[in-house]
Amino acid sequence: MLEYDFMRTAFLAALLVALVCGPVGWFLVLRGQTFASHALSHVGFAGATGALMFGLSPLTGLAGGALGAGILMGLAGERVAGRDVMIGLVLSVAMGVGALFLHLLTRSASAATALLFGDILGISPGMLGWLAALSAGCLLGLAVLARPLLFATLQPEMAEARGVRLQVLDVLFLALVAIATAECAQITGVLLVFTLMVAPAATVLRLSLPPLGGLAAAAGLALAEAWGGLILSWETDYPTSFWIALLGGAGFMLVGLVQRARGA
Amino acid sequence: MTRAGHEPHGMTPAVPESIRLQDVTLARGGRVVLSQISLAIPQGSFVGVLGANGAGKTTLFHALLGLEPPVRGGMWVNGQPVRRGNSAVGYMPQMRKLVGGQFSGWSMVATALHGQRWGLPWYGRAGRAAVDAALAAVDAQALAQRPVATLSGGERQRLLLAQTLLDDPSVLLLDEPLASLDPARMRETVERIHALAQARRMTVLMSAHDINPLLGVMDHVLYLARGRALLGTEEEVITTDALTALYGAPVDVVRAGGRVFVVAEGGGSALHMQDCGGCSAHA
Ligand SMILES: Nc1ncnc2c1ncn2[C@@H]1O[C@H](COP(=O)(O)OP(=O)(O)OP(=O)(O)O)[C@@H](O)[C@H]1O
Ligand SMILES: [Mg+2]
Image (cartoon, rainbow over all chains, first blue to last red; front, side, top):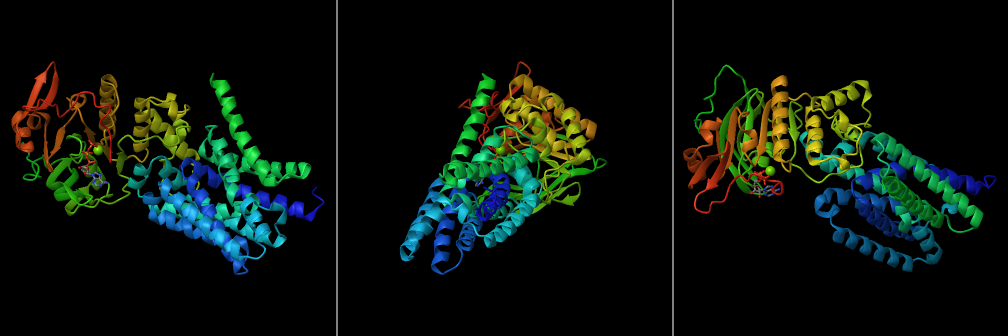
């Protein structure tokens, strides 16, 4: 399958995205903010459809929409970030706006499917450059934030007393989440961002690894699931998103079952 | 007796001051919690901070950490004005819900090591040695490899204490480190903290709901009630007269079986309950 250009592009795109989604997702799960990332992807959807209307690339709209929403969410702080209802409302309004934009678009059906469920085989080599730039920026940002973010996640009061600015961290982290979400949506679609962002990270967090090991393992598992999904999709002709979702869920359950068996 | 607010210089002047409050008023959410407190605590002093729920113990600690600036007045730690992020002040927050319980005790303690610095959580050889030393100081080496979620409340408290020691602080602010411990464990914890404080010449402010586990080790008692503060020795503060004056209502100090009970007259409700496992709810 690697003799085809579009497959090589797809494997590279999966690599770039998985390496970011794993570690960002690791913090997301640890901080209990997974629902926030779910909402960001939906705001990104509105952004992407809006971008399509104006003839821009959907990635621009996705990243822009998610980034704006992420920063606002961080600025609003605890008042919003912890509120399921508030996030749910933002999420549904965003989806509604996206539906409106799609309605106004001419070739809406195929665009909608690609945005909602991903279209990894449709990634152009030109887009690969954008993904590489976003991934590099995101990983660099996370490498700078990781230490205080970990401290603030486990012991917010103690961290604050040591001079960590919790809100600044929160805004910066949600900005990273937004970028990672936009990247992830290229592969899994906005509806299935959970599969690469949350599933591998949550699986790894069950393993009680030390932080750095956990971050690396999350990246590795996300990569394995993304590539595994691509290979299985090639073999079966079923969508990649389906396989990635399935692998993510299966991995999570498997680790849980093994642990229960060990514990019993 | 040093009625806090009148004689901040009442202590022996030979020992330098560790903490000094001058005419400090503290408010939370727009409501005044402590008003016009002046006091001075000498270095190396072990202070029990007592008071009912909502008396302002946590508020005072937050102010000393520079997290909540006073409405008015001045605060100094080791002669320097209070500032946020001062590594000379170690802080153990009131017990809260556990995040990251799957990490080992060692990893959990290590997150606090220069946790405010940008970069990766990579500790280096010196950093790892510092974490090991902090764990050893609280006899928690055996807990290092176990997931924190599998530890008892008392064992977690020891890890938290190890974290506060990482930066070699000269002042420790411990917010209810005894909450949810059984009486034997309470006493053991107090003695451990006292021994550490003496060995490292640290000033300790430790809030508690029950004075009994602290009896005999405190150099001073800081009693908070009705927005006011009373600082003095055990004998000076924990008396019927002193506390009645502080509360502005009849309060009885009853000593029975080597224990002390502070009882509001009439209702007979104990202001310090012996077992305060459930009363650590915190804003
Ligand atoms: N974030 C907040 N916003 C508004 N008021 C607050 C806040 N935190 C505390 N308060 C109020 O300030 C007062 C002092 O609270 P504080 O937490 O200092 O009490 P405490 O002595 O530590 O009590 P406890 O024994 O319950 O921990 C209380 O009346 C409380 O209701
Ligand atoms: Mg308190």
